[in-house]
Length: 131
Image (cartoon, rainbow, N blue to C red; front, side, top):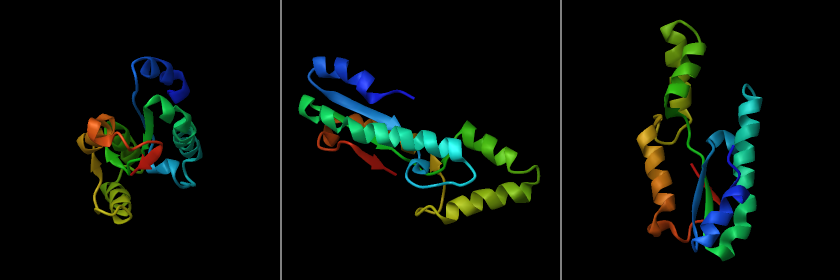
């Protein structure tokens, strides 16, 4: 886990910047089956919130908290859900049902959000979390 307080010095010396910490929506609520994962993601969100003190130095910090995203990590989770295709399809369907767009995110979409948070268009966005 990269710690925003460890990153603020260089950005401050350059006159400001943006730090985007990637957590997950698991950092915003509980997932009873994944306590260690949830604790780590809550930690990322918490560190991002504490970094509000960097605002006067023109350093903005955000926590990006995407829902399930199609990545190699997710493929591994699906594979461990069961060897039967039905179990895998059910797991994906359950996740899509609770996600507003009713689909999993693409990794490129999450990357685009991170790039935007670092862009000049997001200079007033700080110490928040985006899902």
